[in-house]
Image 1: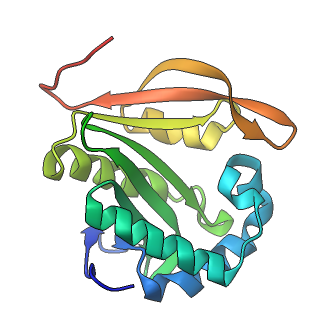
Image 2 (image 1 turned 90 degrees about the vertical axis):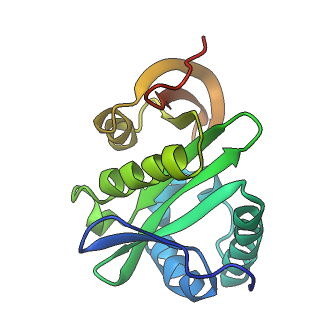
Length: 186
């Protein structure tokens, strides 16, 4: 999957964000398979067939986007083991990123996603120079909404019927975070 290696964002002694490279594919795929029932409720991508070849193809694609500056595809590594993902899609022309995350059910409630997302958001603002970061999550996804709120994001509105759900369509909350001193637009 060459070209880009070694990118990581340290969070604390137990947790870091590592680039989704070849070595992450099989272990992260195993975590996805173990959590499919939960993931399919909230993640549209999880509703399709989950194969190792598909995971490998996605990792190649994501690395290409990372090299192009339009994505930060990282996995959560907790105490040396991959337990989820936390990444961002970037619009470099608009100076905006959208952050997404998920974690293994056995690791929910430990603050891993909040801590990792906080470091990723800081990276997007400080290192990438982005003025705005968004989190979009289903209205009913209480845990994901709580992460956005803990990170100081502002609920800016609800997009009605914006995402396919498991039983119809889900409304999405749009949370925004504007860099201190950055220009907010309405």
